[in-house]
Length: 366
Ligand code: F6R
Image (tube, rainbow, N blue to C red; front, side):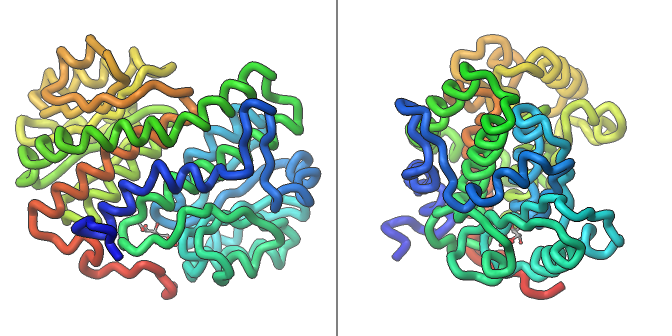
């Protein structure tokens, strides 16, 4: 059932061209300009008029929520807050009638997320679910929702569910922006066209797995890792660090690259691998200077860059090239090498990647 792969996690990473395609199937058509999420239709009007949107989730699902925050705010011009479900539910949050809550969960069974939904519902919020497991508890507790259609995810570390969540949330953001009139026709078309190219671009990144395996071998003994990104790639830095720590047990931290100078830079020495997610986007120049700061302190730089990046290839010890896409869709590509890196490092360290110690696939305890 692992389809010839050594682990479910690897199988699920390699399934992403397909699963991303599945999460868009029947929903996007760039040729006709069609973009539709059935579950959203009934609540679209309420969403358009929402004064703010609160996104809740845990772990990787919370990271997908962070990507969505950037997309919703940029294109749909609606204030978004992203909260850990566990913090949200215990701090007497301010929820007003008509507020929209988006709950993200692969399993649909996460106890904290479910409890946060019940709380928000009791205060009159509209709850929209983005879940993978059909018929699970969270979709049953929400007013409406959209399934991610990534297919069953068996590996404890979430991979294809994350990219599917980001795809669905991106579609939601674009639909909302279109309905509100806050997105230009050009941007709208461009995003749809680019969305449809994501599966083949993921395929291309996966075909480069040998190089990532080679880099993994050189860093498998590291005791710490830093992951840095800016803008849309900031949540990807957090996700890269989470993947690595949960399956390889290497201590890793993700940070927005600009925060480095406020503390973490003190950690940099010749033993500290720093993974930069430094694709060509609006924060490119800024992240290039962050790379220089790390190099100046002898940190070992691995950089995920856009194809044909000549500048960073001269600065970093290793580069991993990925195809270009719209800045807002980049997390769908830039996360892939980080999933592979953590997978290979964990396997090389002899870890049980599909069932890491102390972790469960659905966290049904509070
Ligand atoms: C990380 C991971 C966890 C889950 C979290 C939420 O790889 O799998 O952090 O993302 O437990 O789970 P769901 O999405 O099922 O609510």
